[in-house]
Image (tube, rainbow, N blue to C red):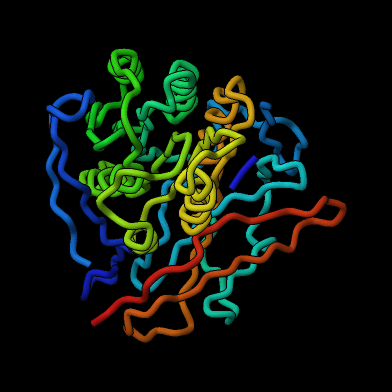
Length: 343
């Protein structure tokens, strides 16, 4: 199972994504609790498999690298996951199995690691009326996700319907999150895009360098202040890996619902994450544990770009695999690019 930037002048330490802020909240219009008012910004269970031993990986204690894609003293770090032809996470690959290209030019890998490190994770949880019949299972899936994560991980929860709201602030205590979530009730419409903005904004206060969002939603946006184009730009400029659990109805009644899966898929794949489409809500717990395992099982390669210009331009990334012989086809999941430093 498995799968993934702005520079500070002088230090070359990059935060590849300028985090944007979300829309105002009104407590009197929203059952989610206290209002939060940011400003609009400037512009089935499938076990992990160890490639070497062939054994299943324990998702409660699997490998994970805490680095986001960034440049430190001109060293670009690229986290990634690898899956096999049955969509299982593949571990056990070595440095020589990876080739990295920047703007189609081969790069020389300088560092390689697969360490376990904590991560700051924002949960973007759909609390619109259409989630009513799925809420209990989705809440339990969230609990499973947190309980299979690194014990040092920190979480916060943005629940959203007409407006997004931070309903659980930073915590590493899963029981705290469970206690708050059980008190919520789905109602009203869906401001998904605004909720993702709020999540990205909240991540500015993250304890750890590695940051991720997990979106749990059953449809497209029909209430947000921000546009899809603004969201895509924000995602491209952030240093956040995004995963989604899409609990979509088979018969989408509106255009927004029909566009929901494509939007979530795109923003996840752009960051090296993935969108998991839920067919049966009974699978929610397994899928949540699977995403937790992916976040804890990543390879990270580092290279010094052959192009050292500080032009602020987008650099496209591509990773190719040269796996050991006899293996099925493998797929690598990594961020699609980063912005060069700008003087």
